[in-house]
Length: 415
Ligand code: MN
Image (cartoon, rainbow, N blue to C red):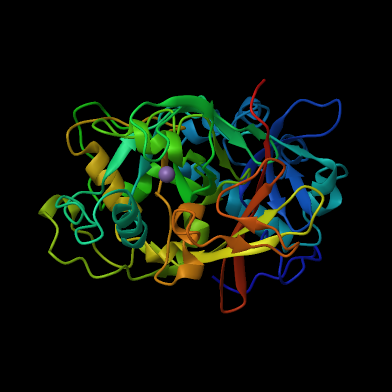
C-alpha cells in the first residue's frame, strides 16, 4: 500500500490510525446506537457518511448501518466491510472528499457511548498458551506433569456462555458460589475470595459455515471478521471445586468483558509473525502455512477505588502455541458449524517471565506471592472497587493498530 496521508490530525501514538479503522456500535445522547468506525479522537458515523455519499457505488443497504450490532453488516460478507474500510482510507486522504466536506459525519469519541459491537451467538474459550496451561497445571494438579498428555495434540477448549459477555465500562458483581475451604471436607457458599481476570483476545466469526462441513486452516481467515480484547473473569475458588470432571462452569460464566472496537483481521496483517515450533508435529488437519501468529503487545493494570493504576502484566499475543486458524479448524473438524457473531477466545495469554503472566492466579502464584500496588496495598486477587484495565496494540514501521482500552470495575456481591 502506498503512503496514507490523512487530512485529519491523528496522534502518532493513537491506536486508531488510518491503518486500523475498526468497527463498533456507538450512540450519542438521545440517539439510537449505530455503526461507527474509529479514527484518531473521532468516530465516523456510518449512516451519516452513507447519506453524505461517502459510499457511492458500494452496495450497502443503509439499514444495516443503523443496526445496534454489526451482525447484519457482517452477514453481507467481509468483502463489503473491506470495501468500506478502503473507501474511508481513500476519503481520509482526499481533502475534497464527501467525508471531509459533509457536516456531522465525524463525532468526538469522548462524546459517545460504546455498546456491545456484536450480538454474540455462541462463545468458546480455548486454553492455547503453553505457559498458562503449564502454570495452572502446576498449581491445580501436578508440578511434575503440569501439561496433560492431550495438550500438545489438541487446541483444548470448552463451550462458554454468550449471555454474560459485556462491553468495556459495564461493572461486574463479585460472584457467590460453592467453594471448598482449605483442609476441609465440606463446601461452603460464599462470595468468591479469589476473583481473577484472564488476559485474552477473541475473534469474531463473520461468515457462516454449514453443519457437517469442517473449515480447514487455509480457509479459516475467510471466516474471521476481526478481534477484540477479552477479559475472561474467573472465580478461582469456585472453579477449583467444580471443574472435575466436566470442566469450567460457574467459576467462569458470570462475566467476560470485551473491548468495544472490532479490529479487522486485515488491519493486523502487517503484524504477522511465526508461531512457536510445535513439537510433537500436529495431525495433518492442524497443519498450517505461513506466519499465523500476531505481534500484539498486551498489558493489564489495576486501579483501586479512587487510586492510580499499577501495571501488573505485560504480555504478547504472539506467544500463543495454537493459532486462530488451528483453533477454528479444530472446532469444526467434527462438523460443528459456526455462525456470524460467534466469539472464540484465545485462553489466557501468558509469556515466559513472571511479569508477563496473564492472570492474578499466576502473577501471585496462587496467592503465595502477593503483588504490591502503587498505593502500597497488596493484591493476590481482585478486590471490590478495583478497576481492571487491559490494552493492546501492534506497532511496526510507523504503523500503529490498537484496540483501545477494556475497563471493568468490580462491585461487591449482590446482597
Ligand atoms: Mn479463559
